[in-house]
Length: 129
Length: 403
Image 1 (cartoon, each protein chain N blue to C red):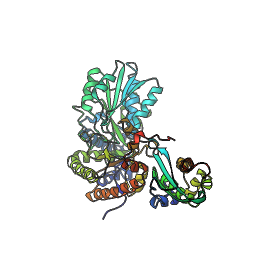
Image 2 (cartoon, rainbow over the protein chains, first blue to last red):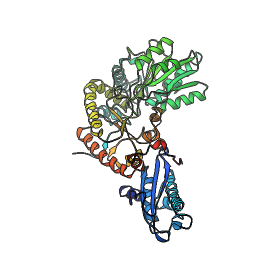
Image 3 (spheres, helix red, strand yellow):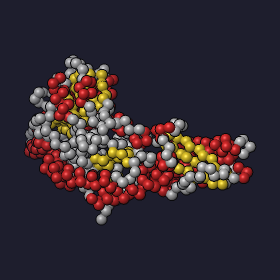
Image 4 (cartoon, each protein chain N blue to C red):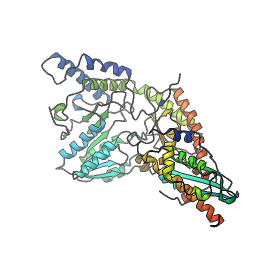
């Protein structure tokens, strides 16, 4: 299968790989996917004042497109408020990375990872955040 | 000088040995006659070459040349054997037995026979990939006409107990078909002692050209088949169609070389395969798929836990290897062969098949070892599963959101 230049770039030089300490202030985690399906994404966001995402990190078990989708998402969410992050759509991810139809599920998973991380943040900090 | 990418996918196909290619060329250009032409020397010359090649194929497996039928490859041989025998003997019974880890050329042909009204039992294998003889015996019924079991598995390289199965089938009056596409040149095959009735061969897995194969059809006791390709009555009516002389000459030469060289070659390849396994064995959580003892020396199928197979293939693009078999590598499903061994999804998704061959060098194996060390640790750094396991989390207790 041929990968796009952008997928290859994110795959070979993934941005923001890693994990925050679990008890770090403002950190929330979204984990989506399942080993049985061949994809698991863990996205962590670090939310500061005014609900702005100051930093993000990821780890992904999955194909190159899954790794690239999650790497891209860490770049996109940084500097956005959590509400703005919720506006990121899988179609934008798929378009940016030129994902082929069989890899669209990777972009859906990345969108789900954002939603899961935000949900975790709201659960920890209440709806006012 | 190391040439990249390194080919470690000899079970998908092999290069044509230069000595084979050299023998083939005259039959494309000067000696182009139709072996079925009886009225002139062009035809006689081609026919002599075809018969010489038939003898070479027969010799490798200790058969009579009259028992060898040319086909377009192992897929066609499997189709002819299964459909031909099932249809011819359908008055005797309508049940077949095969194995879940067979090649698609057998499994899909069995599906077609089910549509034609036959019943097929698909047997499980043991964790090591080998068929349990008692389970095999128990699956045979009074109306069973044919069993089909591959000699060497294409994905994990395990060698099935064909001799014992032959005894069981013969004593019950059931035909045994064996797909030997992955076996020629790798294991000794003696059809004088093996009680096998039909055997499929391919040229391109044994340094011959693509597009040609053969089916062994036993004469004593005689096996009958319904032809699947009708026409000029070539190959004693078993398979019509003008014989591709150059391909056949190539297969004959490839099988002759296999007969002469397989002893020494297999030892050299075994040494390289063991070197590869040794070189990778210090990586944590690496699992060998399939039995290591009853296995051809060419194959090493490994699961690198917590690393997804497709991303690993992408990381080691300097190595031409496969995840599962070439026929399924375009799909996102984990290997059905590994699933049949009872491997869990993570391990089935993390498998890589390395198959070594005639032109593999020690230098190539060493390069592969270095590359894998480097890439596995990089991908594990990226893997949330690896992180969880390092933190002592049992992944089986995690509630996953399947998608």
